[in-house]
Image 1 (cartoon, rainbow, N blue to C red):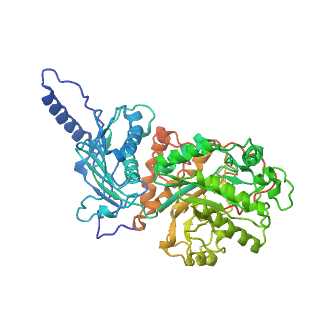
Image 2: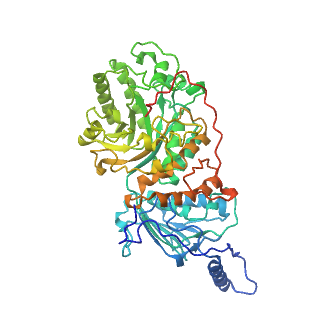
Image 3: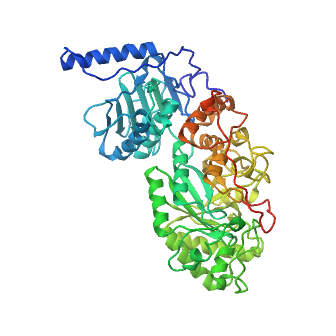
Length: 583
């Protein structure tokens, strides 16, 4: 959609046609025979002259993903980070400043100390309720819990927000505005220039997330933490962990220890399995929280429970343990909805998981319980919802929960491929909100193209444009935009076995979904997005992030920047065929 011509300062900036010049650095060394104050002035003057000769910053102010709400470039206001820069911050924002310094130190080689705010410095992070808006800019008082303002002048960079989360998102924007080598893990000789101007930004939707299936194939704690970093980079603020399924139970529950010890020992194709101890899970939660990402744990019920039934046969309808399952079929398992022992199990599990989860959400699953009669399914879900609510958490579930009675705050995660869904629309009328995860747009386990070596195609092929070209606010008929809580990109792992394969399926589609969740609808423009996204290829390569070199994107073509495709690890043949209905 084109930018509003009446407000040319809003949205992505026009192409900057200023010529570029080789970089130039001015060493901060004493000048012989010149008093210290004069030396500082001389160095400053020399630095300004070098900046003028070096030309504009290599990144434009509008080249940010997700697209900011308001961009006002100032070509005369470029700032160059120097070796003596200090980050100044109020105490409440110090952790964000420490993280920003941690991102910038390896590549720059600069010490970048963090100091309490006394006076503005080259990098200043400020927590305040509002700042005065200039004509034509959004009112900072409306930035809310995650918005920020970023001002770049020749004298420095200032990020202002009402909360640490807003400062963090502003710091991620600053990271993108530095040249791509900033992602290097070792020092690089470069001019660390930031384009001048102002960005005022805030998210469209409060819930912006991705899901990682750790049940079909288990991923170690460090792998999950790396995924958290990927989400935070693009202002996604929720990580949904699919912790339980037929092939594996991945979280320890003290009151039911065999769930992990027995149920967690398997994986698709006969892999080694694994599970998270309570300390492992708390480590993930804490790491995510520091990056302003909320963990959403999923305990899938009443179906997708074969691993739990292997561990505790008394939960099975026939009270007989099924064999461990390492295939990819769905819909055959379920806990006994007629046995009170089942509800004691549910109460214990959701109670322990809720106690280790500071975030407000607990996901009940609820999909593909094909063998449970409709009345029994509805009765089970309604009781399970109440058990979750009793822990103080808000119920989230796949949209198959729609027919069940509403509980306060209930959220349905919609994964359909046809936006005409009267049952879900009715649940919304009864008070439910929606997270949008359409299978044919947001399922990142779908192949990019027919020859993609891993992934599925039951919902269709999802290239980057298909991941980008839809509107969460109007996607499901009969559901108003105000009932949409946000978006989430699920990644199911039946065919995905390594961290490199996870990244290959996430990138470059994850930033597309992130932009749908964060950016105003009026900034939505495929041509501009693909151009902005292309500049992130060198960043990912420098950071060692695997990604798919989608032919839709005009990637830079210098040899050091050409993306490479990981060699997928062959997945062992499953013991039964894949059913193309996994949510």
